[in-house]
Length: 187
Image 1 (spheres, one colour):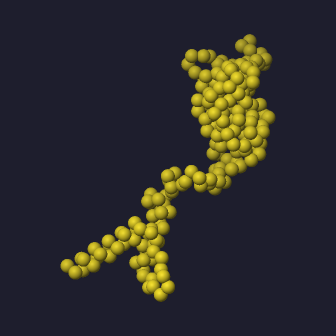
Image 2: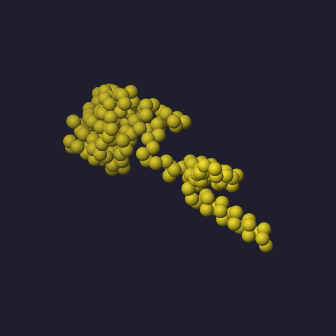
Image 3: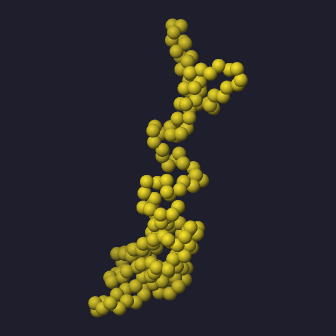
């Protein structure tokens, strides 16, 4: 019976050590294996957030500012994306989906849209990719959207145009729904 009480007491002390702060020693105090093991277990539990031997999103603070270069394939991670699901046919329109851009896009003229980043990029060496977003109501046959190739650290332009139906190569700018994703191997 005495042995069971000792084991229970040691287990209780270990559990309290895991739940509480890390043990610190004062001058002349004896360092015990139990205290060291409890400290290492406590650090382990904090480092992996109690999720076993893996790190999950909840373990990382939003303010951690982890560099994209630390990821296995940083160039494959989109730095910004947005989508507008109905044609923007007026001066300023709101994104339906947006991350990394300001809340609106600006239509300068039919089929020409200025996209603005919410924070300036480190340089203009990024790659925006635009796609037409079709719907079941309107026909966008012969329509295409693309970035026009003039990029700054804060903005770029998306053009949308329709090919003339007679099979020719003539295009005319026209409003269309589109999505855009920006890739960049900078942070």
